[in-house]
Length: 76
Image (cartoon, rainbow, N blue to C red; front, side, top):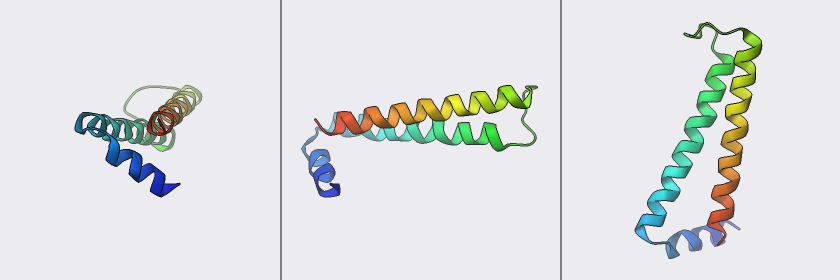
């Protein structure tokens, strides 16, 4: 499985590899941002904890959606 992914990455052009790395970077940004929003005690915006938790979960779900798209695009 991992060997297959590495071979697919080697077959991609420089532009496609750059976009893959950029996609992984933004996946990590959304994931970390969602976790920060959920677990930060002194959140700089005035939000109720329920809304803050919902927004954090929404960002994590969006990050997982992006991750699944990256995986599916990489298999091509």
